[in-house]
Amino acid sequence: MREDSQEKLGEKDTGQGESREGMSANSRSVEISATPHPLKILYQDQDIVAIEKPPGMLVHRSPIDKHEKVFAVQTLRDQIGKRVFPAHRLDRPTSGVLLFAFDGQLAGELGQQMMQKQVHKTYHAVVRGFVHNTGFIDYALKYKYDKIADKHKRPQQPPQIATTVYESVACYEVPQPVGKYQSARFSLVKLSPSTGRKHQLRRHLAHIRHPIIGDTTHGDGKQNKFAKSHFSFNNLALNCTGMGFYHPTSQKWVTISSDFHHEMAMFIRRLENFRVVPS
Image (cartoon, rainbow, N blue to C red; front, side, top):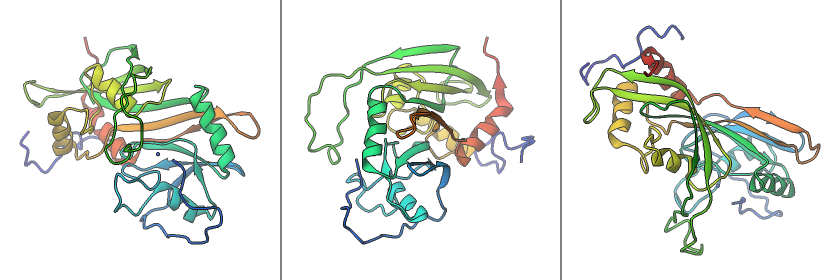
């Protein structure tokens, strides 16, 4: 198929249609977020609220991008009219379940559950190549310093334990050459990290030679370009699709689920036309 074809691969025959907020407790100023759409709320009660974070949105203000004006913390606060405190972080390009508490102490308790590995997180990703069956990645990761965001952190920390379970969900083969290969191969995988190191899933998948599509730091540039030109996919194909934890007040187990964000859902829907069973 020519690159200038108006029809994108897979479009035919689809059959289907990061720290706490720096505002003091006595502050009365409110900055109205400029997000064009309200955040999707997945769960809310009197103590906690969970949203579906879209790709590209920062959780809170960050020195990484001083010019950014839209943040999940402020946007959600303006949307529901209450202060919120993030219990964890998601990288800017990652989408999916993001949990907040309405009280800083409760957010801290949820954070402790994560530190003690009591929280179950599930992600889904589209990666390069065929991933077979289920596997376990036990690969320690050195902390990757950002010269701006991490300028006050202590350098030269030893590698930290990091483990991830992965499971193959589906494999796809597109009959178009990519680089030295005669076809483009992808896999949809389910990921369950038991630790939460910086960029852990992106670095772990790259370590086993199955980088996540759309990862511009640890990924495959040629494969990313192919996904963009043939499938109109311009994001990181990584979505936090589920989270289970003990409610900080009732102590009952809570499970929250999220669908794929729109762009990733469309990407996978188009790939379904090329599903294969690897030999």
